[in-house]
Image (tube, rainbow, N blue to C red; front, side, top):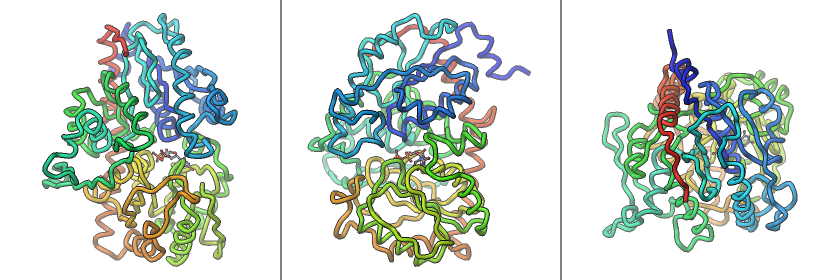
Length: 492
Ligand code: UDP
């Protein structure tokens, strides 16, 4: 029987995908997963990035032989960044974020040089596709352009489009506070209420990064389609909503974290872990199944020292075992060795989430983490800090019913330290204890349902990625679309 991939194999117009991931882990990691998935569909794939970013994933690259990697040197020092600072997670302070964006902009010219046909891969016939993620687009690229977003098909992507294209649709005249979305999920009409304070700060014209996001959005507006790290069964009405809002094709191809089951791919995703993976697995093996809480605030989320203290005391008070990934300046002194496994730096997140001992995930609701938790069948305790995370929390708690809120109310600085959470924004230890108990209580009927729902979604996520599953087919549709459209489009 001929599979769709065989069909693509036989196709003379075997497309060449060029992926240029934005250099932040939340974009870079899923883009590498996408490269792997595309290569499994037998198309040519080139990833263009910088030496610092490839060296972090050198072991992954050695296993991703069908994917070609090209590097362009990153002009960190030209914009005042320290040498070797090539990813947003290594920018020393928020004050230098704009320097990072400016350095990325300087990549435009070398990128244009690279993207001039004939394609990098001599074997590749046209058409080619440049997938630019968040990277400032090279002007006059004679490649068809599709933007990949590591955000939910729904809320964030669509709302971002509305926010920048037509703010009045986002904040209707009569009610300038709320924006409603209708969801038919779970066979019922549901209204999602989003307050202005929960929207990303960069939507606000007075925000220091508004111009950057507007520029990025404009680049994305000229793309032909949007590849989304989500799956049809998770949020179908929002994928539709996104297609309508953007008037573009939308391909949901995730969860991309399931792109490989190889032990090393799973444990070395995005970076080499800062602990010995075997020690971590050994510790997890000694714990009761479903008993461990995994705590992480993503690749950049930092908490203020006072907040670190409250979280630490709260977790200890629950007397439950936990793994805590710390990227903070704050200090935490373990008082009960056996119950806590501390990771300072980079954690093998997907490896941990997949372990049967893990029964809950305290997450900042970055989209990748959210999806990785769901794909591992682990219920979530939601603690958004900013960006799209409050919207993701809504999806998790109100629409999907697989999470418990800790009670964070408004956007805080991701930087921790002096500029971090303070005063009544601090999530107190009692709130942590209460949310953990709700999440982990097995006797509770509501908790049981939550666990059942997330297990169902885990199964659906796995099926979506299998041959013939929705995401697998969507990737085939995307490849088909690219193959049929050999008219190249100028990107302004
Ligand atoms: N991640 C990881 N180890 C860490 C921190 C993060 O593997 O110690 C990965 C995580 O699995 C996810 C990505 O980094 O794939 C973070 O993306 P997300 O969208 O969750 O959050 P962001 O870092 O963009 O805020």
